[in-house]
Image 1 (spheres, rainbow, N blue to C red):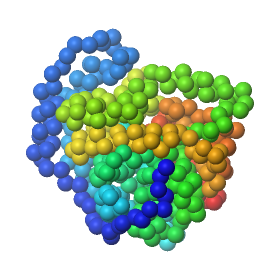
Image 2 (image 1 turned 60 degrees about the vertical axis):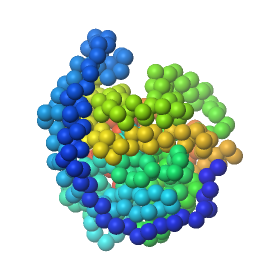
Image 3 (image 1 turned 90 degrees about the vertical axis):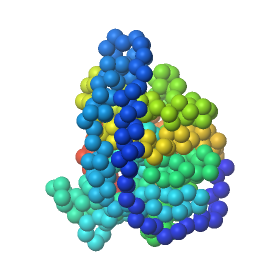
Length: 390
């Protein structure tokens, strides 16, 4: 059980600038250039994992054309801070919204993501007038690197999403001084936002999620819900290997990944392709190589592949997907954005309403798991609509 009332030790935030040494980048590119390519089945598809021909092409671009320092400058254009909360140094982007009435909004990424998922998303939220929108829709955006991920420090042992929610609530209310805020998230950010609304109301006054990871202890109760659960389990059979490994023996996996930039890239690329609304198996129908590589490089330059995987272990210890063994739900107003190619398919609304106080339910025309990168305009419009009606 998470200790929700434990004392949180904090320090005032201080400015953070990303500055990776050139020798670090050169060392990574050398490892990529000298990767010992080996034979494997390659029929042009991704049936066995990341396609060999694509991986070779991707790595050639990585070595010869990718400019990390251009991407680093783009990341640094936002206001970054770091603060000590409890037992870790927590990094976060804090972009104050335009105008005088910006709504505080914390947005949380997941795995295998990072705050760079939000590089083209934050400006839409914080400064809508720059993009043809209304300044009254502006948000004060807080985008943390989750504990153990990217530019944040590692927790003393694996934390799950409920424990992370406690830290992020302290960031918003105690470090930044917001009396109330809205939480938004996909992937692990959806679970964290759920626990922010469940454990930390009324400070967290509403949540917006683009994934449903939580489960009700009562299980499905209608024929449609039973059909959804059966199909969900079938769909997850070929996707569940990484999740089981990271939830049970993450340390064993880390020995290989911490020593191989190409290994990290392949592990992440597979998910970016299979979880996104791509045209066939063309991952670049959704993302550019620069977008993919920038996110991959965050894991590599910070040496956090190992500790980022801990969240799966932490959730297992917290009790898995069950939101409340007693059957309680998130009572703060909740918005659900349903993207059709989401890896974790959405249940019927009847099931979701036993978990959340749903005030907005939007079925999107396209998009997948990484909504802030894939369909930033659709997602930001849905968040704005929800905030206006609170």
